Length: 387
Ligand SMILES: Nc1ncnc2c1ncn2[C@@H]1O[C@H](COP(=O)(O)OP(=O)(O)O)[C@@H](O)[C@H]1O
Ligand SMILES: C[C@@](O)(CCOP(=O)(O)O)CC(=O)O
Ligand SMILES: [Mg+2]
Image 1: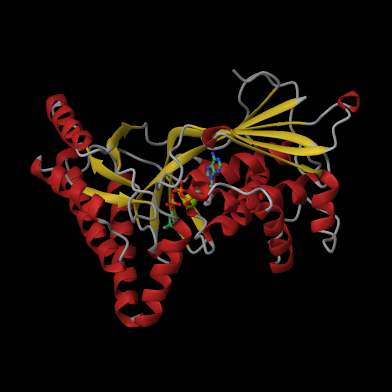
Image 2 (image 1 turned 180 degrees about the horizontal axis):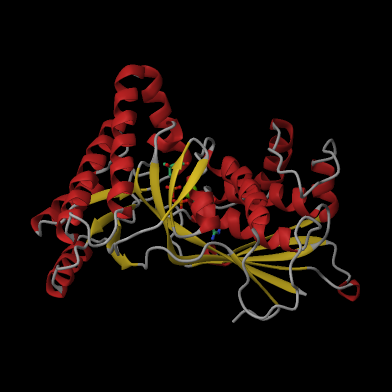
């Protein structure tokens, strides 16, 4: 029996970083997914290893299952119903296993993902041999939430073969979880994100779990019902960066300038609140669609300015901002910044010719533009053949 899970990536429309410090943020899922397939060997396979294939980076690892048990020997019997943080001791023992893998220096960021995998696997499934295969449509480490999609899809696949969820194994095609199961899965995914990000707000795993658009503040979500279609151009600067380091940098700046940064976070909170009001306001209300879009553009520019104050912009991001401004289009970074992806609002009345021109100018700078549908389902699973 095999299970396949898929979880979407996300864009943050406003409030990244500030959300880690308690401000409101708005995020939406996108139709680019990470897929995790999980298969247990049959007794005749006589296989006693846990195998992990990371297809996107062309790497494959395996551990005799006894080595993982040994590394986590002080741990209680795994309980998939109780999301548990990885202790410092367990993290140290698992990190020693990951060190042995000799991951190439250029791909060293993957170590954190492998650590999160080992923690989630052993906590939810215990010490059983299995093969786990991961593929993704998301660029890794670019601000589109690949780490969260990885943790959410992994938690979904692992939980679907646990005692903690009750699913119809004969269902054909993609299947969603019930509310309490989603809550459990989201909590496990958050534990994985903590290993990858250090201090995540939880917005990325939450939007990947539930899908659509959400307002998120201090760990709690409000689902947003959109009353307008937002179209965004996503430009990947292809400048690599690491969310953990950027989040830590903002926290250090906050320690150095607590009052100034509190004002910055407060301003971001107001921007996100106003953005949510605009997006949710009834379609034919006193603000026309064009007026709504102009307000959103202004809020995006203001948010970008505040992200610069936090120290997470980058020369490549500034190039995207300048380029899109030539076409009177507003942009902001999305995710952790420091490179990665930039969002540009494409207003409803914008002509296709302008979109083509701005795209080709951005691509001539060496960037990669993509369009992704905003919103859509959160995590889903499929038993058997999921093609
Ligand atoms: N498909 C994947 N295969 C392997 N590792 C992944 C995958 N997706 C995410 N990761 C892990 O997540 C890390 C990137 O997370 P992060 O720096 O938060 O950027 P983002 O979440 O914006 O893509 C990678 O370095 C890796 O450890
Ligand atoms: C910067 C932050 O707000 C979002 C990070 O997103 P990403 O990993 O860059 O896709 C961090 C967080 O909220 O946990
Ligand atoms: Mg991430």
